[in-house]
Image 1 (cartoon, rainbow, N blue to C red):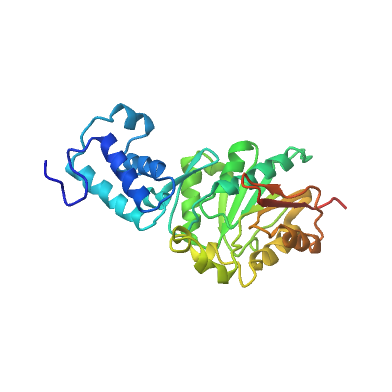
Image 2 (image 1 turned 90 degrees about the vertical axis):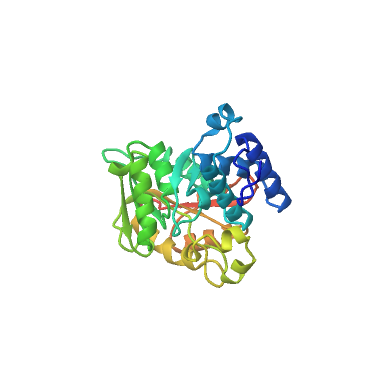
Length: 298
């Protein structure tokens, strides 16, 4: 059987195509080549894991082989799988992506975990809990919290109208659109409080460090969502005072931090008259990833 110009043969079984792609990715030095191959084959053939297993012996059609090779070439050029397939799972929720949104990462789930821990301690009575997500991107943090707190209403802000459209679409797809709204503004500038939780994964990479990031990040994540200024703290300097003004008494601000940044962020929070009542929360790699502070009642 003659091979197609795609690099795959139309007679490849689904399983042999997956193995061949995994081998190509591994030879190119791509980590988690086996997982990436499974995800790309599934996306190219519109099959979930069950379908990949039950149809493992089925032969690829020429169109499927061509589509899969296109995905393979993009991954070999270090485009992230989530960008290729246009979606990523976060907190068990499938989120669509766009060129204006970060790919949600497992580290950011630490922010959700800490926010939920704090929320369980809040004393809220007679009104609906309110959450704001500053720089919402795909809506990942906000939608995860709304999913876990059914009584809450949330607002997501972003400078990018494209990102806001993506977040709104995700809210609709997840059945959360009636409890979420999205606003174009710089940080929290257009918001009025009070909010019980304010969360954010702001840009925190020092500008000079961006060229040193992996190709997957520096060439595919939006620069606006990465660049934290010369020292990495520009966004925190802007959003922390705004958040402090808009928190309800007893409410909390929870932000994501880069490695080694938690101490300076706590200093900025204290300067905004917020109180640290717990240490930062570490992610699975041990990085102090989520930093929080409370607005103490008068």
